[in-house]
Length: 74
Image (cartoon, rainbow, N blue to C red; front, side):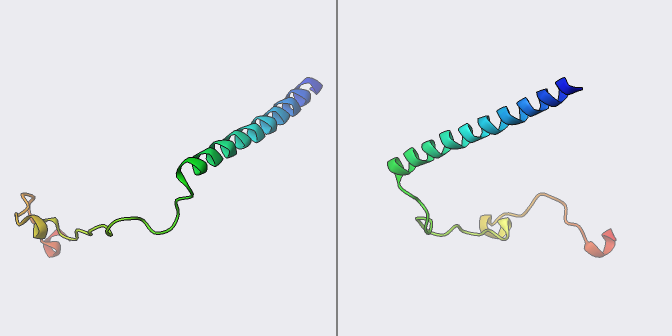
């Protein structure tokens, strides 16, 4: 039983150490990216996206899907 407790503690400590190392490496990587490309942020560049509410109205074609009458479908 004592061996299981020791193993659990060792695994917990190693997990914590590996997690902290992972965070440190990730922070260094992020810092390098910020140095290369800047801090992004702010509003996106370019025109706003166009919202298409009805594809058929844009393309000028009729849909080949059969039309469903909502009253009859219930």
